Length: 219
Length: 125
Image 1: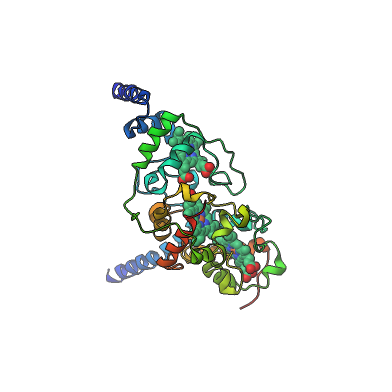
Image 2 (image 1 turned 120 degrees about the horizontal axis):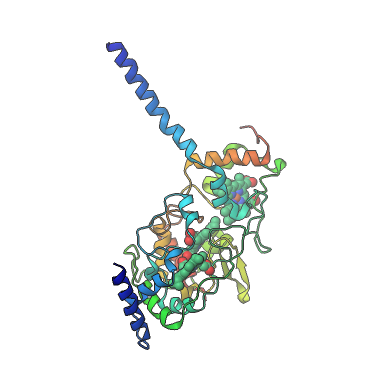
């Protein structure tokens, strides 16, 4: 067993060396070798059942990363991981220390290939188009408390909104619009235990699409 | 013989009915529920000073340690606003609706927790 994993690592290293050649298998090996598994799990479905399960996690689940993120953003972020959440993960008192591990360019290419292969079939493609959606804007800023917990850019690029949820500034480059809708529609699949309220039954499917489309347009 | 069995059966039924209800109440760690969901805006100590309350937050979340304010609300008012959100009580939509997120038992436990924080009984009714 040990010999096989040593071989796998050797193979992975050999593959990273190939210039410009991104490889999901090498990415998986690099993910393990870089100890990413200490804080992230990559096998679905969701494992969290209680608040304790959620609080025990040291980082967000990545088992549907390929459905959630945009590849270009992911590859760049792994090399230069600027804070996404303003608060430290799972904390309402401490600020995000901004100390996420960094990957070198070749590893980042392979790891993002590996992560983009982790998808959920609860995300239907081509449903939500990013737009300056007026109905979505009204829901986000006035009718529902979204802006109370999420940072976004108001007029003249003024940073507005709350701090407990991930910042939504730049979501247009970061998240897959269809995932945003799927997350609102079936939150129990992605995040069964989370500090964000469930909006199923409070927002119609149409309004979930409207607000997803509005958020997906954030530059 | 028969009578003994009947008593035994009755006991099983009574215990069976009582156990799940008691179990549920015990399962709720209300402080944990409060800190996970409500502290984002109301603050860990319930003073209305959670991390979301920045200078551009439109309204102050209720300070649960203020008995004067909290005494204006009945327990039914609290339940209503927690389940259906601010607008259900003509308050700001920044107070989210939690009815699809929390169980009714959790909301009931939270009402008790808020009454401990304010050290007040609330309006009758």
